[in-house]
Length: 207
Image 1 (cartoon, rainbow, N blue to C red):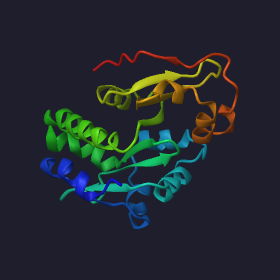
Image 2 (cartoon, rainbow, N blue to C red; image 1 turned 120 degrees about the vertical axis):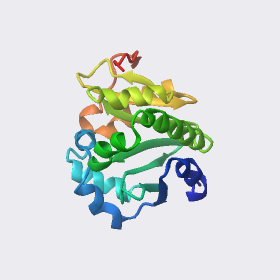
Image 3 (cartoon, one colour; image 1 turned 180 degrees about the horizontal axis):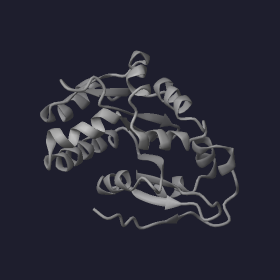
Image 4 (tube, helix red, strand yellow; image 1 turned 30 degrees about the vertical axis):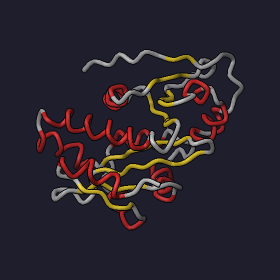
């Protein structure tokens, strides 16, 4: 199991710390969740960002909160385990961190985030064969960050939706075509037999 002894060495060089996430941290993010993450949570099967956030806090798997001297709650992240050594990786950030981090780190922020992200993904992939999640197409900044982290993107060809699947690891193509997985994560409206295989899509997002 991934623990603080694994994630803290990745974060500490950048001036951040990690703690185990508990329900006591919930008010920090209910009152200061980034708007983009609210939108993304509202697109899940819960159809309500607060309900989805509550479910995130109570989900299985190890969950962490990232703090610093300036932020009691900068980020929360974790991996929810699925059968077959599959992990649904997620991360949410506070509105104040999204605004203040660029001011604090300047041009060094993209490199810092990229370095920490790659190290964290390498850590997770030591424990899971494949990592995945879903994201709305309009989240162009987050998609660009995920693309740089090595994720591949797939969309359903039988449903008119702006939601895309992203993943990396062994068997990611098969996982992307799993209709039941789409339904369990996004809701019953996704539970339709696919007319075609899902298609991988190139992600070309302006820098």
